[in-house]
Image (cartoon, rainbow, N blue to C red):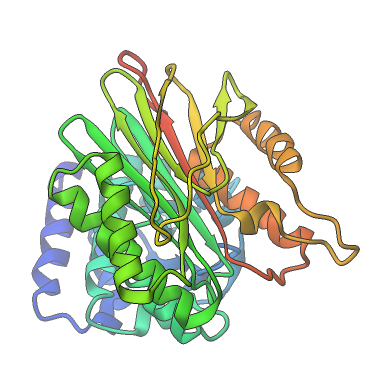
Length: 395
């Protein structure tokens, strides 16, 4: 059978099976339909919530596999197919759009070398990633597989309110990281692309646990409601302020940064509500924090917000973060600090890696600084703008 016919048949068969598929049976169906491409076997590995390892979706498959020092890990980190030296086994990234879901392990046969199936495997993996995401809505199997430790109630509630960690078009990439993933409560982020305008927000609610999650959740809902009503940044800030004050009184507050980017011109507008200013990365170097009016937290009233406008250049990256990043303390009492963040960001930029991998490595550094025991939520959100003529590196 011609290769194009094999691919079409395999995709059609996998799709046909999904209509009445038990989510837990997905690994079996993936393996069986991948055989129609001429491969020996195919196994699904998902990235853990802490993004430190890859775990098999089927209990019959060996794992977990680390992200460092393994071909599977390199495939995930680079979003490129990796192969063993003899070509008998390869790893294919699982990408839901540009969201890194995990990897596929594919074994070849004596009759069918894997190096001739690159395009077919990429297309097949794309469908598998879509199915992992869609089927996870009906079962706890996928989420349970990704968790190495139990998740707290506050984190359980918060994660259900957040958008996917990564989204990209030819003009931009937006990606985020939150830690400690299993106990995060007060931090939140959001984004939306409508026409030529990308809107972004980062929030940090006072306190910890479920109370902070409720604050952040209301701020997030008020932001979305105001944004969807067509309000500008100053009006959105006022709406968030009013909702928080009405629900929780002036004893509670949320800090944050609101932003919107014209993806055709690179004009970025920002409004700061007593939140750390984002860092600008240009020509592969972190050049420092943007100069924003600090403003007052949401929920305290007396707003006099100022919108700052920044002209981005093609390839610029903007990193927003919560104070839990720079205030993370080592056992000796040293803060991680903004200067350390900027230095580390510059070093990571030299690797010319996709924004999601840069953020993953940054958050790992923050965790290592505090030996894995963060005292406050730490959130990173990165925006990369490609410009009018430059396209971003494919994932």
